Amino acid sequence: MTDGALKTSPLHDRHVALGAKMADFGGWEMPIEYPGGGVVREHSAVRTSVGVFDVSHLGKARVSGPGAREFVNSCLANDLGRIHEGKAQYTLCCNETGGVVDDLIAYLRSDDDVFLIPNAANTGAVVELLAAAAPEGLTVENLHEGYGVIAVQGTKSDEVLEALGLPTGHEYMSFVETDWNGHPVIVCRTGYTGERGYELVPAWEVSAQLWDALLEAAAPLDGLPCGLGARDTLRTEMGYALHGNELSPTISPVQARVGWAVGWKKEAFWGREALVAEKAAGPARAAWGLLATGRGIPRAHCQVKVDGEVVGEVTSGTFSPTLKNGIALALLAPSVAAGDEVVIDVRGREVTATVVKPPFVQVDVRED
Image 1: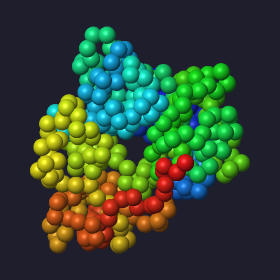
Image 2: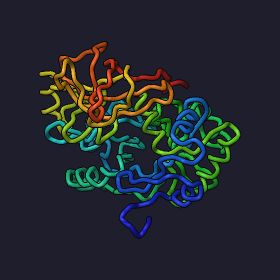
Image 3: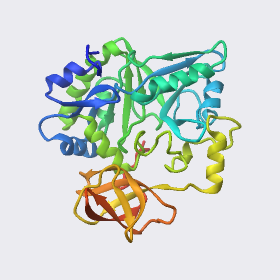
Image 4: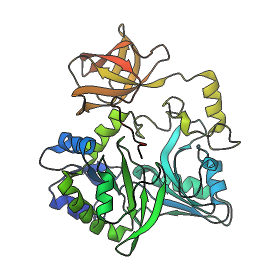
C-alpha cells in the first residue's frame, strides 16, 4: 500500500517500472495500459495469443466453519448446491429490493470452507453483510490484502502456465490448489475476457515473483502485460456485466439478464421475494447490446432514443478493437427488441445503432 488515499497491489512496483499508465479502480491504483501500443495492442494480444493482467484489486474473503456452504447459499443468489468441491460459481449478493450489492465468484473448497472473490470497492460491504448474518461457529474474514490475483487470458494461456509447471486443462469454472516454488497458489479456469484462460490466486508476498515468471513465459508467445483498459474492452465485446455499470444496487439481475446466476428454486436468499416478483411481472427495462452503424463511440450514460423518444441509457460503451466499431451495452425499455434501429445521443451528436444480443464477438470460453 501507499501512504496516500489509494491502495496499491503487490505488483505496483512492476507496473511503475514498465511505465504503465495508472488510475483509480475501486480505491486501488491499477494499470490502465502499458507503453508500446496501449489498449488496442493489449486487447489483440489476448484475442490472438495471451495477456497477463494484474487484478489484485479484486477482493478476497472467506467463510469457514461447520455449514459454511449452507450459510453462504442462504445469502447469495446462485445455488451452491449445483456444484461440487473444487468448482467455482458466479453469484450475486442482492439487497432486499433485488438490486445487486455485488457480483462475485465463490470457490467451494469444502462444505465448511467457501472462498469469495468480490469486486474491490464492494468487498467491505459483502463481508459486513455476511458477518452480520453468520450464526455462531462461522467465521467471515476479509482477506483483501492477503492474496494477489493474476489473470492469464488467451488462446496460449495453457502454454504459459505449463512453462511454470502449473496445472492446466481442468474444467471451466473449476480450480486446483497447488504450489509454485514451494508457495500455495489457486489456479482457476475463469476470466473476464471471453477467451480461454486462468486466474491465479497466490499469497500477496509471492505475487510479484509469479508475475515476473508469467511475463517471461509469455514473451516468446508474443504475450503482453495487459492493463484494465484492455480488460474492459474485452469484457464489453463479450457483453459481460460490470458492477457499477450493468449491475448496481438499483439494477437487478433480471434487468441485467443474469437471471441464470439466480437459484430460483431455492427457498431463501437475499432479495428473493423482490426478484421472484419482478421475474413474474417482467422487468421495466432490460439489457441489450448496441452496434453502432454511424460514426461515433458510445459512452456510459448516453441517452438512447427511438423516434426522438428516450427509451433507455447506455451503461458501457467503447471502441471494439476486434470489430473496429463502436459498441455499447444499454438498459432499454421493453418496447425495444433485437434488430431495432436506435439513436444514441453522444454529447449532442446522434449516432445510429442496431440493437443486438451480445456477445459482439464469438469465442468459446468453455473450450477444453
